Structures are given as structure tokens and as C-alpha cells.
Image 1 (cartoon, protein in one colour):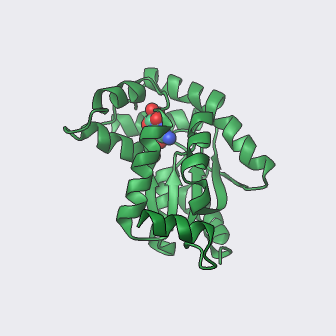
Image 2: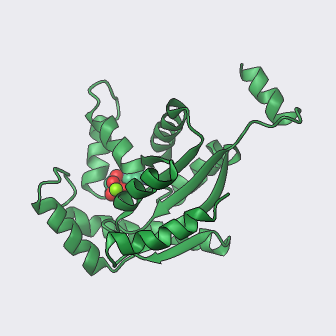
Length: 208
Ligand code: C5P
Ligand code: MG
């Protein structure tokens, strides 16, 4: 099987079909998860949230990475890409589908390099959906989510400050990188979910 894969990718005129992909980025609380659910309903993509996959792995009693992931999440730091990429790849394979929204990834240079090395060749990246939102609005939303019982260890003021620092210092440069490749589709995410989705719908309708 390994040989067949290698042979097909190198020599066969019948190249392996590539996964269709959209990355979804934006600060914590910009509504990535909310919009992704709507995209799934309307366009049949599979939604993979890097944060959700890491939280599931943390909660898996058999995982050797549980404690480490908990520590990173509490401190708003980005888990090493080897772990996240493995979880994403496994979820993509297990789904049996070909079209994915990957939300909250790539979040820093390590994520970007690791992904390009491990998966870059296997995907067709349509664009990077960027939900632009002021940190004030995002803070209000997240603290409300925490107060309403999100159960997340990082939906509090202290963790949030660290998550925003990581976003500004590590994720913004990744968005700029994709911008320079002409791949960013930026939307004003301070609006209501339905208003934002009108624009999102237009973008996805154009994907063939
Ligand atoms: O995207 P979300 O807000 O769910 O991410 C929660 C946390 O998960 C992040 O603050 C970070 O600690 C971790 N994470 C990560 N690498 C990613 C995405 C999330 O380490 N690519
Ligand atoms: Mg999320």
C-alpha cells in the first residue's frame, strides 16, 4: 500500500485525489466555530477544530500528551505541531470525506511549517477565511461564554490575555503570510452571526 501510494504520487498519470481545504482563522471569540457549523449545514464540509481535537486528546485517559496539552491550553500557548497535525490527519482520514474546514490552524510558524511538510502536498487550499474582530468585542463574547458555563479552562480573564498575546504575536504573521499569497478572505466578524454568514455563503458558493 505504501509503495502503491508512492508510485501513484510520483509516476502515475492518475494522481491521488487531493483534499479540499479551507483554513479558518481569527482571534478567540471571533465566531469561527459558529460560522463553521453553518458552513457544514449548508455546504457539506467536515469541520475540524484544532482546539476541539486537542481538548478531546487531553480528555483521553490513554493519551501520553494529556497533561502537556492541558498546560498549553491554560497558558494560551500553541501545542507542538507534531501532535496537532497527527490529530488532524487522523480525523481527516477517519471521516472518509474529502472537503474540510480546519478551524484554529495553522496558529504559528511551527504549525505552518509542520503542516506544509506533512500535508501540504495532499491538499488543495481554496482560501483562508479570516474573521476580523476587535479584542474588546471578543473579550466580551468569551467572558459571557465562560459565565454561561462553557466549561473551558481558558475562558477566563487570565488565560484570555495569554491567548490574545499568542494571537497577536504568533497567528497574525501567519495570516499576513497567506495574505501575501493572495489567499486571505477577510470578513468583519463583529456583526451578528447571520450577517456574517451572508458573506461567508457568497465565498463558498464560488468554490467549484
Ligand atoms: O481554537 P481554540 O480557542 O479552541 O483553541 C484553544 C487552545 O487550544 C489554544 O489557546 C491553544 O492552547 C490550543 N491550540 C493549539 N494549537 C492550535 C489550536 C489550538 O495549541 N492549532
Ligand atoms: Mg473554537
